[in-house]
Length: 380
Image (cartoon, rainbow, N blue to C red; front, top):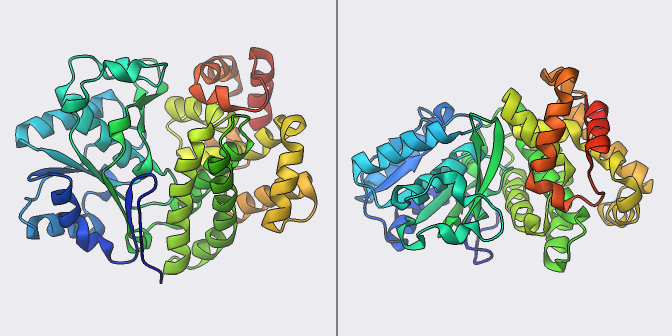
């Protein structure tokens, strides 16, 4: 398969077997004693042991913090910071899916700050409150193909008191190097392959539909959708297909680059549902994607028709929606939020939370209390 080294938006080492370069990447970032941060489910798996052994063989030690929940919260962050300090670490290897990557990046940020993490939410210029010099270097190693956090300058953290997902932003949260090794994703279960893959598709779709001006992201989002539509069905059927795994890792990275242009109602709905009910983020995105497309139809129909033509989908907007619905059926995505445990009596609360989510600002249709509650009912 193809091997490449990219420098946009950061240094990306792409290709099978490139986990062997982890020690070199850490040293290049200035680390001498990195802490590998990952989630509980990955802690004992062979891919994680391989990464730790590569670090140890490079003379960088063998240190791991795996206290990361599927929707990480400030308690996970506090435990990670404690592990960082106890080990005298000077860099972070953020390893795993979105949860491990996001939490790892924040562990690199927070030990040297004198404010709570919520003071660095992605609001205005709040990021300037942080001591940039105190943010440790980060090397990111994704083991899924969805979130794209390996090329992002932000992390999502759940406030366990308010059950809200907050986006914490700082330019130095962008990893110095990301290693995209498709071999690390081969052992992903089919359900996680599908959920994370549809997350990548959601990032590309919402960036493409966002009304903000960013032609570069527009093009990246369109090609990212094409990669997902081609590769995700293949890798769902044959998890050992390294070319398809590689295309999905590329699409995930492209989605995260593209959504600099903005996200929208898919994420505005998904974030509170995930925070309150603990649902898988990508799977939740997939479950609400068709209702959100219908919700935004008047504003995006022409744009989606152009995308459908590029993607080889017949039938314009309706054909595009049918394609998404067919993918969801093929991958066993729940048919609505009710199947994921969401109760109708909590819709007013969830809608209020959605309207506070920063993704609202990138939705092509203005979201109000009335139409957001109606959207939740449609998603249910």
